Image (cartoon, rainbow, N blue to C red; front, side, top):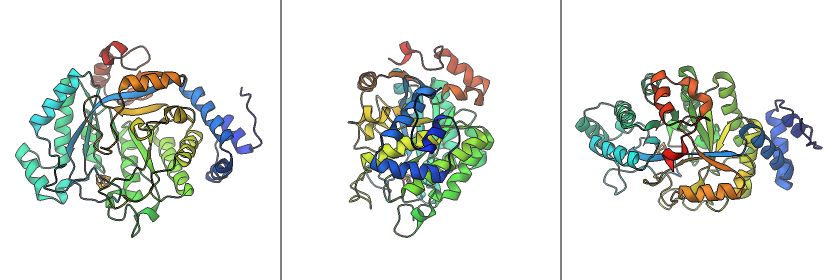
Length: 389
Ligand code: SF4
């Protein structure tokens, strides 16, 4: 039973675990722009009800496998051009060395990231693959994932729009995978908009990847990028699109809410960062649309606002690396895990280290992978404290 009762019928419905429509959420949001307190209270109530007093993170190493990319998003600083100093083309040797180091640092997750199908656009990428004995980036990722498993790390691949067969192959070693929906709005792909030169970010293409992950039963991380010129209506549309996929397949293990930060070497360098008040509304809305979802914001993008976001519905800090930078947001270094622990405690939450797969999804993976997890798993399905501290 809930003691909270509001004037808003929609907020009461949410507290009673009833479905709300797009228009009802939009109305809640419009009211919350003037006074967000009731929305925040409901979001926090749901968060406590479904996630308790824990907040999780994943201790990871970021493998910037290749950052050539056939697309161009107006906000992206990750993508490199041949000859640039930030270009990354990791050799098998470099991958093995970083895996060993990650193991030494007691990382749990090997995050493998690439640009979108680099070999389709760049000779340099084709040469690099050939030198290492592969014909596609996906093949290389399959190999890298096998190496990670052999070393005792758990791979999570985020390589854009992989096809069904590639994902099927990667499922054998990856305990989860990721692809950001970003936003479901076609408008953001029009001329002058951030996804105009990024065919892989067409909503239809991204939704198809997420559908495939559902058909394959892959625990999937997705999310939206907030503050890139979208409307609140488009945010709500995007969150409902994720919810619908999850209602159908039950495999969306977490939703990342990433706040836009302008990068000096990009077309959107003069655009403002996502407004914090607006971002908080998005966080709270995500919680009311998907009350049981794992909702994550990256702590390095909001370093001064930990408490603030914990109080409106998030329950995960995502991957934090003690040894590699965030190559997607290189100007924002990861906080120290001890600091995250301290700030989470101050806000009344216990920090837990999770695997790149949340415990609720353990049944999605093979027995081999599940057995490997159980070696360092505590009684709640998180990583044993003595392993990661
Ligand atoms: S965000 Fe991804 S798809 Fe877009 S340019 Fe960067 S690497 Fe490529």
